[in-house]
Length: 260
Ligand code: SF4
Image (cartoon, rainbow, N blue to C red; front, side):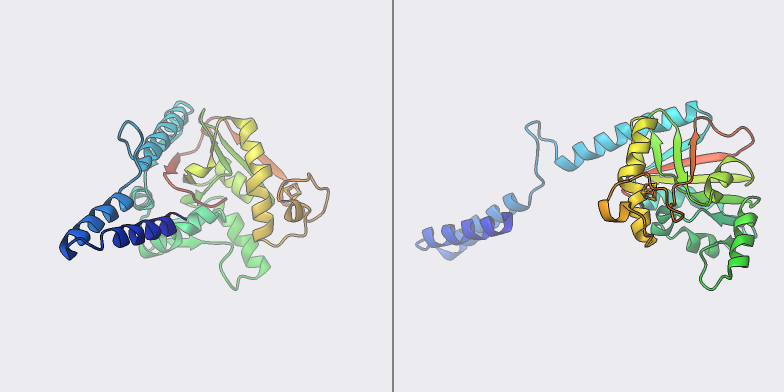
């Protein structure tokens, strides 16, 4: 719509200025194009992008401070590149690295990063695994050197909230791995635990059901119906109110949408 209006405005001006010398008309249209492509500004002269960044940074800072208060190591990575840079020191050659089946981890291609650092990858979703090998991998993740996962929600008061089907992810996030890193996009930031479960029921669980092609009612409605089916994927509910006492636990909040 904006492009169409811009084109119409230029056509109109071209027609009205047909008496102008060619270079005057081109200069005027050049100025008009600059105006049309300039970043939109608020009345105080701020760009919408700068306001958005301020808001994200403010919420992320509050969550990072609260996470630290709950015993987690925590940092804010404004971009995917910053998140990758923060992750790199965790990968040492020969380390056994487990992954929690996360779309956020997949979006950042963290497996490739670990493989490039000569880590041993424990990926239960690796293609070609037999069901027995998959189970062995899930068990091995519980005692790996580094476990990397996302969560379903991070609260502004520094809690991590998850709903799992198998429970492997919540188990590893509670105890076992020598070090744990959680990666979460700001789309997972919510006010409190109540809002975290609302987010899970409205977005995360139905979208994961759709992704996994599960025949559960949320795939039809788009929101949780609290089903009683054997195929239900929401089975283990976890709130990490504080850092699990024997864990080395880092949370990286990333300034973009990641996963569901
Ligand atoms: S409880 Fe059932 S309906 Fe609700 S999100 Fe989970 S699988 Fe879907």
